[in-house]
Image (cartoon, rainbow, N blue to C red; front, side, top):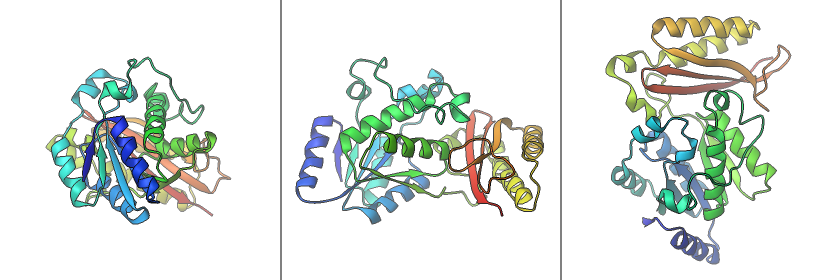
Length: 282
């Protein structure tokens, strides 16, 4: 496995692969890799001749400096995992390389979609995400990019950005990888204490309750959302949002909509947990 930290050397390698007629699949990450990330790389391996993974903790998508400073960095272990799963190149640029003029840089915005739900709770977060993804796409120029569906809003935001900016990149979403009890895998799960981890899967179970109720004919979305938020808060969570939205544009769902996604974000101790379930009703 090749390791590059300089943009120029990355581009030289990509150029060589292109000249050889090889296709490139790209998986952008912030490191601290878990089985969910590895599943993305495995999927990339099936879809292209070369697999490139970036590891970069992007400062401009953190709304709190304390969260940025606390984000775990495990590069040596990450590289071992990537080598075992068939990654061809890992790219680990410095902050100075990505933002040579500092963080007061050109920003990419995706209006409306980037301002709701997670974007509303974490102001500036999606501007940071769309900016770094755009910059990495310009460096790597992949044929395919792989993202996890756990961050459903982020996946939609990237797809929208790529379509709006006419980028010749296929964006593929991979189903959420879960722990045995149903908790969505996340680098932030490491923040959970033993006691918090013992109840964390209740989040997914309560989302499933809402979906089952809706499929069973209950269309009172607001009442279901409120009921579950109260139950989670009583159990020790701090609910941020739990909302039923339309899959196609994440607008608030009406009783006439049939293709839906339930999105939720909660705090459990220091960990912010995200999850979602896409489903259809008839």
